[in-house]
Length: 335
Length: 287
Image (cartoon, rainbow over all chains, first blue to last red):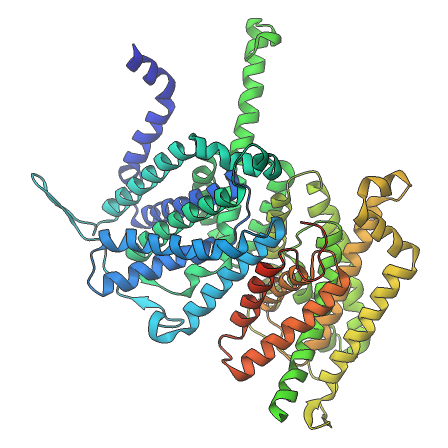
């Protein structure tokens, strides 16, 4: 009975999962698969950003900085001979630790002040990455980063990550893991206090939530996932350069998040995949690419301010209302 | 000592540009509450228009500067009407995304029209001057003088004209301003026009000294935001003081410690100042 109910309620997710697992078979082109894999990496970063920006309401523009810390961390550690599976959590923890010390002074500020203070940190990371030649290799960056180490399995042998499909499944696994953690987190009491701080910081304080500690926790967790995404990125691209800390990357994520729908779990993933697909399909415009994209962005904000998920929800509500009218359910009985 | 004076002078010149651009931004950001991330790109476009008028139409430097400012004022009004007015009742972040769309559009537009490479405006006043041991060019002195004149004019505009008073009224209380019959839409248009025009003038003044390139706006726009936040949101004196502080910190840090890291000092200084005073130097309300 319970299992039947589970399938009745969750079947759209199962279809999505089957589709996600079938992606390498559906898109045999190496290029397309690479684009999808990288979009999934960015989706992990955007999910992290969603926690601090979407759920906690703090516009952090330092996210690319933490992504870069994760990327450079994995690059340096794996080149020094450490296993990817050890280097990745270490780098993400490093990003989280740095974000703790960045959060202490910057989270004292609010609103736009916080956005600009974190933006400054992001820019500092990108300048340091470009200038500290002995550590980061300057503007050329670090090349020849090893792929993730193969996982030995008792019966099937080793799972290596040389093929594009294997890399895709690796990233998909991390994406699902991130979604699972975020799902558990935002539906917990801690998740509610994030939302409480977003909605009204003073009120949250009045009911006993330590707003500063809550924001700091959200900021640190968000940066941890930025670090994870950065580490995977470095290992799959096999090179890093100061571009990973660039403001443009940061702006892209904010766009993915807000067009997808901030403060929802589907929003960041949908936004990242949809907009990556859009920018890829605009490639034929060559130098007119950003001209069209910029105009589309403004139009999207004017005509669908709540993002794609908001658009779908609004559309779904209209359909439901229409359907109920057709079958004659009185509107005051609607949940 | 001579190096020190020279660096401070360079800092004041840089700071003049930052101050003027930041005053324009603080009007839009602090008073209308629109995070116009495309402000640096208005600046860039202003420099390009002057470059275009001087080199292609063979107009003299000063008329070209005025024409460029007028065109940018019109563009400011247009952008406010199309991009930011529909965002007024939506969360701040939406206006932020629109601003990103606008800056992508403007940067791509300039790339398509004038190409990605840098250009140089012929310097109208290249003669060097020796002023109290500081060797400089007339153009650099002009930048400093023009900034002072522009700041004084802006101050008179805000404090002494009816239009300026209505801008301040909207800043203090939008609903109250509407109640006493102020047309808020017109105030928004005028503020954008003034803001974009000052950016164009600042850009045209320094364009003969540095190159004009499509990416020149991005970093400057970011610094203008930093200055606005440093001085305190919506505070005109804060933007001016912040601009000169940023310019001097950058010049001294770049001159004495490391040129590669000069922006790190500037941005690090901001984080430090905000850690001590979270609402900026002259800020009152929490933004």
